[in-house]
Image (cartoon, rainbow, N blue to C red; front, side):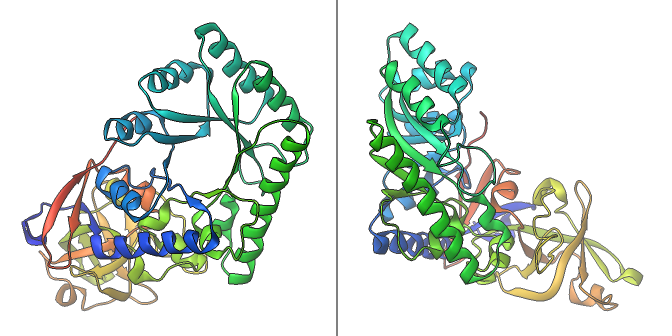
Amino acid sequence: MKLTDLITPVALIDVARMTQNINRMQAQTNRLGVAFRPHVKTSKCVEVTDAQVQAGAKGITVSTLKEAEQFFDSGIRDILYAVGIAANKLPQAAALQEKGCDLKILTDSVASAQAIANFAQARGIVFKVLIEIDTDDHRSGIKPDAASLLDVAKVLADAGMVIQGVMTHAGSSYDLNTPEALVQMAEQERFGCVHAGQRLRAAGFSCPVVSVGSTPTALAATGLDGVTEVRAGVYVFFDLVMRNVGVCQLDDIALSVLTTVIGHQEEKGWAIVDAGWMAMSRDRGTQKQVTDYGYGQVCEAAGNVIPGYVISGANQEHGIISRVGSPDLNIVTRFPVGTQLRILPNHACATGAQFPEYQAVDRHGDVKTWSRFYGW
């Protein structure tokens, strides 16, 4: 197929850009001397993940057990489920493990660790468990110096569980936008997680894995002493939030939404397209950043950015394209009805989630369909 054969809106992957992004991250982690475990929640796609593994990734990270099941069925065995596990999901995790999946699960509290221990002992199985560390006050996890770190480890060890190690995610790096700040956050992330691992070992617990990562800190890190692996996800596509953070350029963004102009409000300087928030998502992550791209940056169908034009408003199935600053009263001439355009997304994970499949576009403009996973 070609782009002109597609019924819009559709999610496009620029395969050349994606490949460049994959190679860039793999080269960075190779240079730092650590294993790379990509977070595949961004794409949830076998073809994308296969490209990451072929480039040198060691195992994958998932955000749902459904992802773990589907990627295991596709042939990937080494999987980290990097969301604190709820007790009602332990049977699903156990079933995966019993099929031969090398699954690692996550905890950050005594209560959760006790639930893991109780279930595993009743079932006669052993889970591999990582303890989540909070290194930046962003979300969940145990502080590196908290007494509860050793309490959690004791519950797991007493029940015969395998303490696989510690992991952290410096998600607050998304709020930064200078190289200096990103380097500092990468070091804060590294130091906190390594320190937590050292405390476990000093107390007599095992800790073979020290896992860190976010796309900004992974790319900004200058040294990762004491770290064994890095995780990152959105780098595979990048997006406008990452552009504002400063870790990519607009022409690095590999995911876009192909849309068609379906009408105009000429006196307002608007072109109306068939990609509303059901296609782009409601994520307005750039709204609080240095450049607000509305619901997305407008590009030509070939992928070239059209400076100054964004989706400034969105309804369920309608997007409004306008020029930033002053209305374009020649909008009808600039974007005639039937014109195909690509829209770069604020948040690749959220936009990708709006579609059941991707259309992967190669250097020659040929298109192949790649499926996308859903569910929990």
